[in-house]
Length: 66
Image (tube, rainbow, N blue to C red; front, side):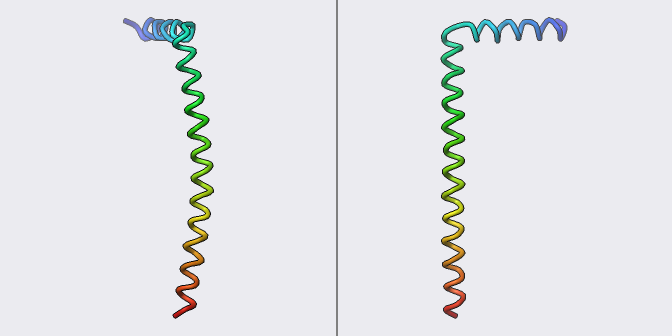
């Protein structure tokens, strides 16, 4: 089997999967999951920044108390 034939069969399988309703549903679920992950990353970045600022303040207060 040549590479070209294997690639052609792979493309045909992908296009057949995309034409089916199940394939479209899987793509939609994939997009929803991707958006959820992006939102989680953005939220965690905000939490991480707040946490870093809090511990910086704690550190400076402990150092000034000595």
